Length: 342
Image (cartoon, rainbow, N blue to C red; front, side, top):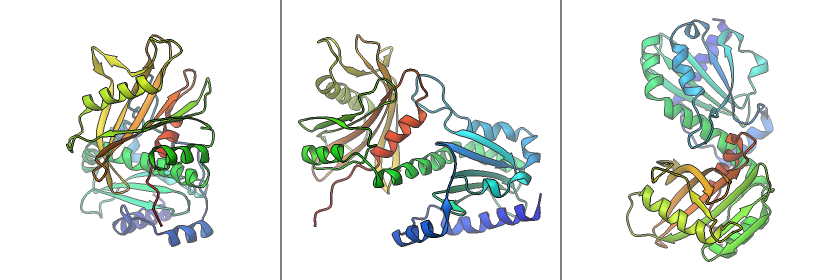
């Protein structure tokens, strides 16, 4: 391996201890923007940098199982990331400004496997994630045990890049209508220019036949339980959608797709912005109509108001891939907040 590349990895491991999951201050962000170039790369693109000798072993399978995994909750197979893979000895200046990078490395000098996270190293915005282990066996085991964690770190960073863009440019109409309806604000892409407001409910959308983006925000009474019940969530979702998103005929309305009477929904607990939320992913359809697609929701509990707040993004685009469309909506969901009173 080139000496410069060894120094790069050494720097990554040393800095990782200090910056792991660090939160950048507003002043630091401002200074970063002034001193770093704009990062490059296609949406959801990930540069994978791996030692050549590792790629020629079964560790290749371990790495590919992580970076080529499928997006959960879609009708058709789509990879989580758009992969560009190079060997460590080919890592050079033209790659340094990529917005998302994963380095996989064996270094006998480290005592145990470690994940290092660096942000805005050579460009802004940017994430560099380094997985290092003393030997191939430990690396293999560590990658297997932490595959979901690695995927989440990279995907979350890419979503947060979209969040930063939305905070600068967003649909003011949707945010203003949500403030009037539910006393909250949200920042969604400017293309969502149509809204529908009802009691404790808002829909915003693009009204397109392809690449149609939609957001819904609604709330209902909290029963006091901190346990997330997917069945109750889906039941409430379907009742809200039946009332507020009907089809053209009386026998048509949006509902959650089921298989053998079981909703096709994946749920888990997430920590976003240091707050616990429930994430749900699934498929929607319009009953008695050939319409459907994926959705993703973030469910929050407002214990003070004793309300469950649901923010959901769903996509209709039958002839295109949906990963990046859905991630736009995932970013929007993370901007939901109550305005601070002065």
